[in-house]
Structures are given as C-alpha cells and as structure tokens.
Image (tube, rainbow, N blue to C red):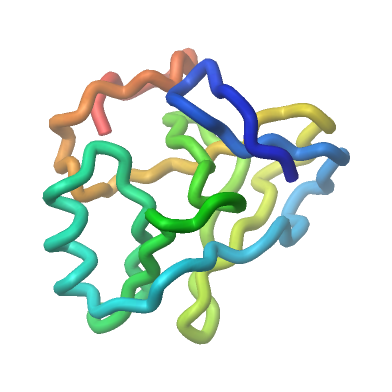
Length: 128
C-alpha cells in the first residue's frame, strides 16, 4: 500500500498490486478507546479516522502515520470493513487494479449527512 495525494480528499491509500475480489487487504490500527470517547473525539474533527467496533469499543487512527487511516470515503467504494473479534479488517469488494485508490463507504458516519461528499462517483449521495 502507498499513501499519496488523492483526487477525493487530502491523502489517500493506493494499492501497489492488483487485488482479487473479497481478498483481505489489511487491518485498521490505532488507539483502542471507548465508543463514547470515540464519539466525543469525532465531534471535534472534520476528517474522522475512527472505527466503532461495537457498543463499547472504537479504534482511533488519527495519530497513525500510514495505513488505513488514509482510506477515503466513496459512495461507490471498492472495499468494505468487516468487524471480526474486536478488529476492523478491510476487504476488496471486487477486483482492484494496481495503482487504484482504495475507498470505503463511511455511511452512516458521525457527520450525520452534513458534510459535503467529494467522492465524484456517478452515484454520489452528495453528503456524508
């Protein structure tokens, strides 16, 4: 994986190799915090790098310098998140060519439909 400038927003996460459909790509890593603390932190951020694992636990990747913290939202994503035993893992929705930016559908999100979407997909919902 490689972090580099994105046409969607800021930095993005790009694959260096082709990925197969349903292939596990990697794991979201960061500080393990309570869900309550995650929601409190999310209110203070425009770019949220927090994944809620369950009703008690969240992972905050805000201070991570690489990895899935940089995956951008898209209304037509090419990956999805699967929560397995208090871990958040990313998988390819379909085959993905090398050099492609990885995206995930972040809805529902802490923005509650108030943040304008910049994904530029044909099926964009206009807000996250």
